[in-house]
Structure formats: C-alpha cells, structure tokens
Image 1 (cartoon, helix red, strand yellow):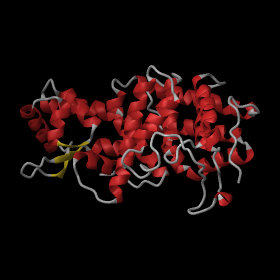
Image 2 (cartoon, rainbow, N blue to C red; image 1 turned 120 degrees about the vertical axis):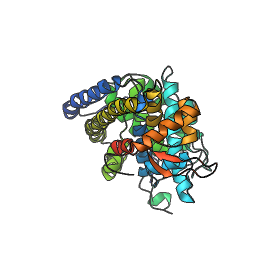
Image 3 (cartoon, helix red, strand yellow; image 1 turned 180 degrees about the vertical axis):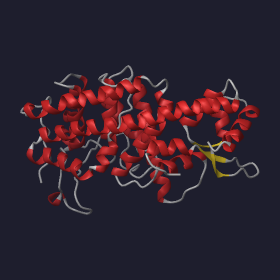
Image 4 (cartoon, rainbow, N blue to C red; image 1 turned 90 degrees about the vertical axis):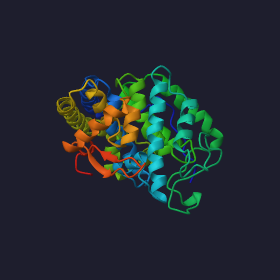
Length: 367
C-alpha cells in the first residue's frame, strides 16, 4: 500500500448543499452550550469532573482501561498495581496536556512546537514513552492488524520525508480562516490523524485539538467542549469515516459526521453542566448552613476541584487552617455529603469522596 497523500487545505470539492443543512444547527447547539459555560463563575474548578471524564473516554478509545473514580482514588493515595497504574497515568497526562495547551492558546497560536510539547507531556512515563515523545516520526509507520506488513496495512500515513511539509501546511491552515470554524476544526482534526505525525499517541493529541481549536477560534469562551464521549460510543463509524477520507476522498461525509457529533455532544454536555450547576447551588446553601463560616465557598470549590481526596491534601488545597477545616469535614460526613473510602489510621489520612458530584458528572452511580 502506498503512503497516503494529504489533500491541500483548504479543501476543494466539498458538497456544500449537504453541509449547509448541518452547519447551522451545529453552530447553534454549540453557541447555546457556550452561553451556559459563560454563566459558570470558575469553569476550570466547577466543571473539572467533565475534564476528568474526557481524559478517561479519549484514552478508552485507545484501549486504556481505567475509570474516573480510579484516577481520583489514585491521586488521593489509594494504591493500584501493574497495568492499571499505567492506564491511570495516561489519563492524568491527558488532563495535564489539556491544561498546558489551554494556557498557551489563550494568547498564542497553535504551532508545531506546541504540538511537540503536548505530545511530550502526554507520553511521559507511560506506554509509548520509548517512541520518541515530542518528536515527529522519522520512519514510516502503518496501521493494521498486529504484526502485519506494510503491504497488509489498512492505512499507511505519509512518508516521513514529506512529513514536515504536510505539517507546515496544516499549521498554516489552522492559523487562517475557512468557511466555518466548526468545518475547519473537523478538517484539522481529520487531517492531523491522517498525517499521523507521531509514532504513538496521535489519536489522543488529535482529540485534544478539538476543544483547543474551538477555543482558539473564539467559538468557545473556555476549552471545555469534549467530543470523546460521542466518538467512543460511535467508534466504528468514527474510524470508518476517517478511513473513507483516505480511501475515497470523502471529506463531506466526515464533516457531516463531525457536525452531527457536535450537536449531540452539545446537548449531552448541556444536561451535565446544568446538573453540576444545580448541585453546586444546592451544596452552597447546605454547606453554608452547616458551617456558618466565611470559608463555605472555599470548601465547596475545593470539593468540586477534586471530589476524592485525603483530608490532609484538602487542607493544603483549600488554604483554610487545619484546625478550622477538619471540623468542617466531620460535619460534611455527618450530613452524608462526604463518604469515607479509607478511614484515618495513625499518620495515614482519611480518604473521602463527594459521591454526588461524581455520580452527577457520570450520569449514573459510580460510587
């Protein structure tokens, strides 16, 4: 099989009569979701459960087997063994990359240098750490069944000899404008995946690019629109649509799929964000009544930022004096807001969980 030759960007030959019916609804759905985000005082804290969920689902597409609660339990100090630790670390890295890139893109364009930096953080100390983290591939790779030859491959990315030319063209495209920012994001994501610039981790970097590009294009006020839930639940169609681009040049079909995904994910995200906001409002009233303290909001924000935690870590993150915060935590346990996953033993701190937030973010009971 010959290496794939990416089409020049912006694309020509798109069937606009098919796309025009989907571009409007997708933009309206995303605008409604962004309007809701704008009402969130501190989205990075209040909606951190959605970021954790995205990291888990994007990694799951690549075969990683870990859950949101396992990641938070690991960070709180609960021990795991073997492959589970590697799975969890991949998810933590994904979340760290999103934070790093979001900060960079607030006032800088998306560059190849940032891509390399993102990849280096993503692959740090996990499977694939031996596959040149932060370096564009220098050899030909291919995709297919395990152990297949290049002749048996289902897809062969561009030759490494032309790789930098294709990447520079991609960089120029995302820096410019196209007919619509959602269409541009769809094209940029797919072209990145087809160029396949790294030896490993291309899928996760490519999915990270979706909220980052929408943020950079000012479609979103914060990069908190995640498509991995939809892509994971439509995995076969997701890969099939990307394959149709390389085999048949069907960019229109891919963009239609992407726009449908935006509509559905915007609706799903809106339901979750509203549920989280409602929970925040109820907890604000309840915790204020329980503590009668000026620190009530700090307690609440610290719970939302990390809903599974060691009591000693809670003291550090909240900034509230230990002699003040520990009685607060006892009251929250007595009220049934916090549940113990591990009781205090000697110098070992208790590990507590804010179950209602975790279950709210997931849409079902996980703890």
